[in-house]
Image 1 (cartoon, one colour):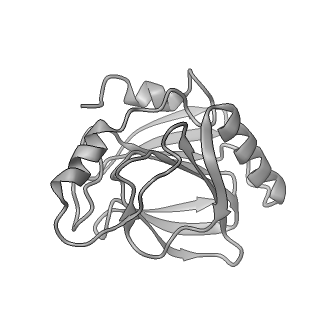
Image 2 (tube, helix red, strand yellow):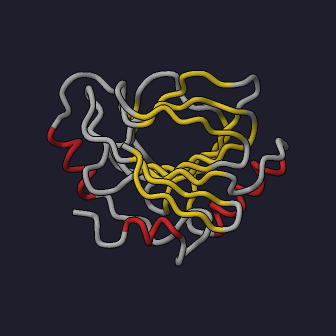
Length: 183
């Protein structure tokens, strides 16, 4: 399931590829990306502010601060970035048989449309900062249930790759990992 991993200074970037899984379409062309230690692990409000500042600066909006739902869900019309501002969590990426990852303050996940995610347990006070590319801020939220409707698959295929990496901007690693892979 997990794929390529690159390291730059303390940042570790890895790909997660999950095929369709129990009512979760995932994304056949683009992997989810996990950025470990992107902001260090100091567990303060400053991390939330820094994630929001970076996301907005790089064209990602609709910022929110909260946790991650404890049920399998995905977005068919938007990419989603999750910056971990406080605490730790075990997140299931890709549906019930997907990959279980551990994230902590200072980590970031970048989820292409269709990628399932669920909180399977977190520390007290766990907080993520979420955002969406410009034009995708009015995302949908779909619970993973049974058959995947054709219009959902169409939405996933039609959602344009963001113009920038939410943290690093126009020349960020997300664009390198996704270059030429969208259908």
